[in-house]
Image (cartoon, rainbow, N blue to C red; front, side, top):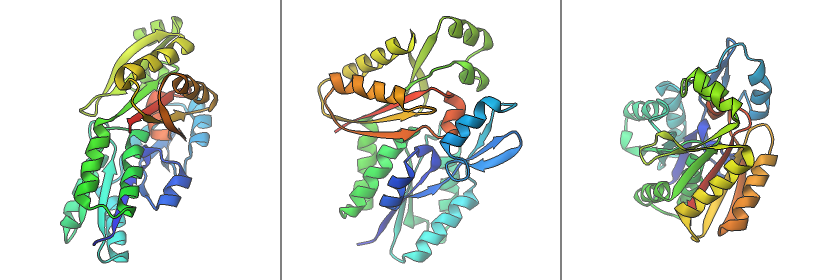
Amino acid sequence: MSTIRIVTDSTADIPETVRTELGIEMVPLKINIDGTTYLDNVTLHPDQFYQMLPRASATPQTSQPSPAEFLEVYTRILSETPDVHIISIHVSSRFSGTYQSATIARSMLEDESRVTVVDSLSATYGIGVLVTAAVRAAQEGKSVEEIVALSAHLRKNTKVYFLVDTLEYLQKGGRIGKAAALFGSLLNIKPILSIDNDGEVFSLDKVRGQKKAMSRIVDIIKQDFGDDPITIAVEYTTSQLPADEMASLIHASANVLSTQYTWIGPVIGTHAGPGTVGVIVTRV
């Protein structure tokens, strides 16, 4: 039986303590702020990023890891453990070229059959759900095929919801026009975004006011999952307080088995903006 190692990228927003505990290898994306390039969640951590973001003279620019960076990680892991197989799980190919870089790196290996690259069709801890489950399945002795099948199953049973606090960063990123952003901000509009089965972001709803928007997310979760047992991951940017409030509302109305908290990292935060709350719900 071969050893299985899991590789992911920094947009999975897996807390460092969890990555260390589970032995997850993370390849960082990059973010450029006012001419300085940082490694996402390596040389630039979320708390630092959200302090810098309001002072940035221009919208930060994000970029994927190169194939060479993935190749270095794959080569190192393969050389460390002769019988290892790598499962590399990454941010939706609709959002980023990261999955493509990983695929190119795989093709550059002498024996590319030793690496399996998975498109999560998700983002942030929606990827983290697949990655952490893959590690635990590997620890239980599951095969590569079983872990890939598990990832596909979880992907179909996991939904991601984002409550965006301000329209400013969606406008800067070209998601909405300036007039719509100004009008929405004046009306205190809070967009609720999600990710569809093809790995694309779409708007679920637009609600006036933070509290009403949180209640609307709870309603949507009930529609999507009913009374089925679920696990949730709640994400935050500048303060955990809105995440705590969101988690309390969900616990009061849904069958929640466990709750994970994590930051929304710099790359995702560039597009969503400070004050965003993310909820990742998985049917158990």
